[in-house]
Length: 290
Image (tube, rainbow, N blue to C red; front, side, top):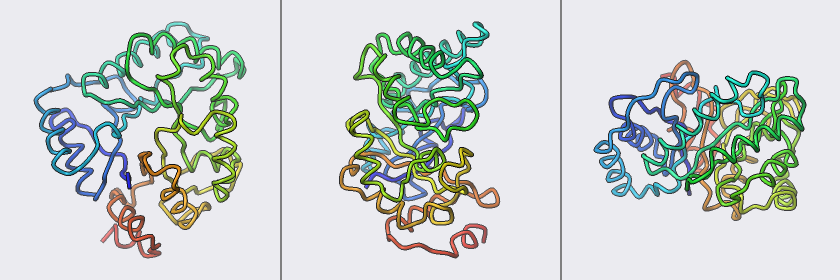
């Protein structure tokens, strides 16, 4: 089972630190930002550290081809009202793609963007234009994340993602990252996941799913609020999330926890233990803070 979480990537230890953190949680995969998600500060990639990290992954049977990078939040490809900001988003995403290439990462998760009043059609066209520039002459696959539909977010339904994918010149370089909290908050019933997958397969095709963010939700279905909850403590529920994690059609897809810290402590080791044991622990949060 490919299960892991978001882990840190700092200037000093870089990918090696990410691997060590993932292993401390009992992970078999992981996801990281190559720098802070809210700013442009980036350290130079140290290839020697990357080699050490890959060696450590090999020793612990972590398939590096299934490790995920998440693009920074400050990138918005849907809004070209201010052309300087739009051009910046394209340039910065191209730099992130290059960093993935240097690290040997295959998949980069991206929030499609918010149209900020331009309208969905204009926003989708802006995303398509930007991605065709970014994906020119690269082997990196960008995974469009399913969004909760907060504000003017694009990508909160499968049709919007399909329209973007249809406009991409190189279809091999575009895929989808499903997010269980976002799906719930956008209006999809994740408690009937077979039906949801059938709908996705009809609209886009299951072969495009390359990553799944596993999160419970603090909110009811169709709330459009995007507030993650720890596994089993939200409205989706532990049993429903276990069915998704262990779904036969998704067995080769990396599942990544993005659940909230509990009093500034990472919950991932405890949540991964619950998932591996397939048994919910209602005392999880108290154990984390001890």
